[in-house]
Image (tube, rainbow, N blue to C red; front, side, top):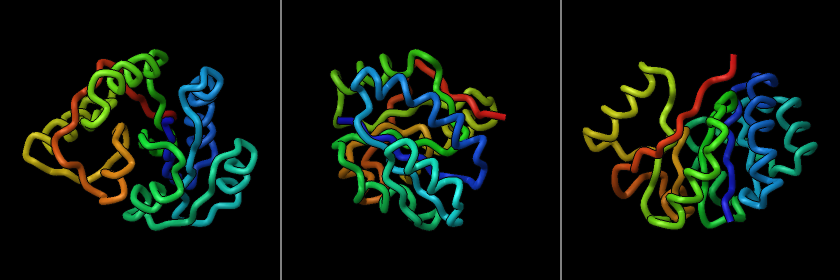
Length: 161
């Protein structure tokens, strides 16, 4: 089962945009659980988690991914920042990756050119920290580090707003 981890940025609109994109994945049975991580304690984020059946977790921005992994029900995680909107065929791209190479980390790259270039450079120089767009085994998220550079998936993610 795949768990979505969404790191809230305090914007209810950005959070709503990301949650709305995840509904088809839940309806298809592809996404089984979500953890919403909030660093600022926003009542709107807590209400959104409650309304969608997501687990709400208050954690610092730096500890969001590892702390959320402890609450995740799935053995694989997809990491998003609030406002991330993967392209419509993201489910198929992630599902294919999980069938072929589930143990390897993968990345749904950013559509924004500057962000995409930063992601490429970051992983090409050996950085192994976690970030939005990653699809990873839960064990990797618990450590807070990738064990290798991620495979870039043939789907992009955009930013709401």
